[in-house]
Amino acid sequence: LMTLVETFLNTCKRLAQKTAVIDQNGAVTYNDLRSEAIGKAALLLSENTGSHIGILLPNCKEFVTTFFGTLMAGKTPVPLNYLLSPAQLLYVIQNAGIDTVFTNSLFKPHLGDQIRHILSAEEKSHCTIAEENKITQGREDDLAALLYTSGTNANPKGVMLSHRNFLSNLEGCVHAFNFTERDILLGVLPLFHTYALTTTLILPVNVGATMVYLARFSGPKVLELIEKYKITSLFAIPSMYRVLLRTTESVKHDLSTLRLCTSGGEPLPGDVLESFNKTFPVPLTEGYGLTESTAIVSVNLPEKCKPGSIGPPLSNLEVKILNDDGQKLPLNKEGEICVKGPNVMKGYYKLPKETAETITPDGWLKTGDYGKLDDEGFLWITGRKKELIIISGENVSPNEIEQVISGHEKVFEVAVIGVPDKLRGETPKAFIALHESAMCTEEEIKNYCMQRLPHYKVPKYYEFLKELPHGPTGKVLKRALKQ
Image (cartoon, rainbow, N blue to C red):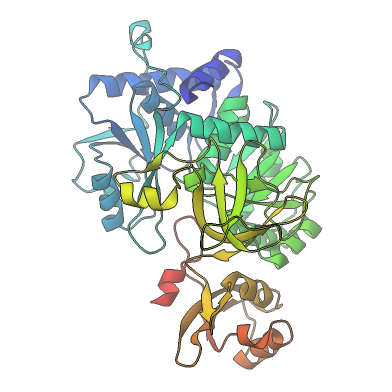
């Protein structure tokens, strides 16, 4: 095992003249990346900074050079979510003890006057040979990133991930997808998110692939870039694929170079999967992971795929299903998904109690997600432990009801939550956004559900909204709906 710095420098040496990153400002080679990253490290070493360095940037080449430059200076990068409210951003900066942030002119105003050193990521910083000798490569158990999860109910928690965490997860992914330096990846998800950081920054740099970054997601732009740069793989979330499907209805592009499109981050609705597989030249494969497990736990592969499942676990980690008493359950029985392997986080930053509640003494990570393993080793997700609706003592997953309602031709998007009910404890309520110009009644949706769900699972209440609230990573914000 090595560190992210070692693998980065190896790739930069091996493929010095190859195009590494293309963003809205043009293309740079691996050699350019290397010298700019060392320049950033030299800049950090010359300033008197703390050990955690904030990165507040959109997807661009500077994100890459700042990330590796920070590691080379012996510091820990903390990618900051630029979609947080000012109060939450301030909470993360204070919690992580950040006194230095790399940013650009666009995002600088987000920071207010809380930060001692605000460094411009856009300025070219070149290095001398003397500076190059000062850079550190770190050790495999050192922190390689501190990532804050967008907490569904409380303040974001800092997840401590080591070099070993990232490299082991990468090994699993590269092995599963056969990534090579011939791949050209499109980065549409924001890099402050572990799914994006692992798959569209650390992975391509590791194998020497080319990355094309899009600072802001747009359906037409994505299709245009796939054709223009002959993109081979795309990692995104269901709501992005939904937008892409809508875009392909009006614009035609050559998408024949795609060999892999993967969906994660939230459950993939059946209707999106079905339309995608009809419209695109490759099947859409769904995977599953979480920040605490360094991005990816399991994934369907084009050649080994079961629609509706989240695929078999990666080869270098284990998954088991436990009941509420911590007993291992047999195949096809539902319980909490637990993960063990070199990809499991070191813990939550400054939260020993929460860490101990999440990682068992023998190293199993409790995910808080409910699911089951089938006879062929495929993992199925049946709901969030925290989101389960308990109706007269029965656990009901909102996901199951959402899958049914999203199959209705007039429904664009749906989210289901539990609301208090005197008789049954809780009852489902559906929030629905319709397709543009579609008209639909509560009665119509209710009858549709009656034919497809057990009666007790049919939502009692319905609310039609123009659009559902989305969080920073594109997930539907159920806590906003609850309020």
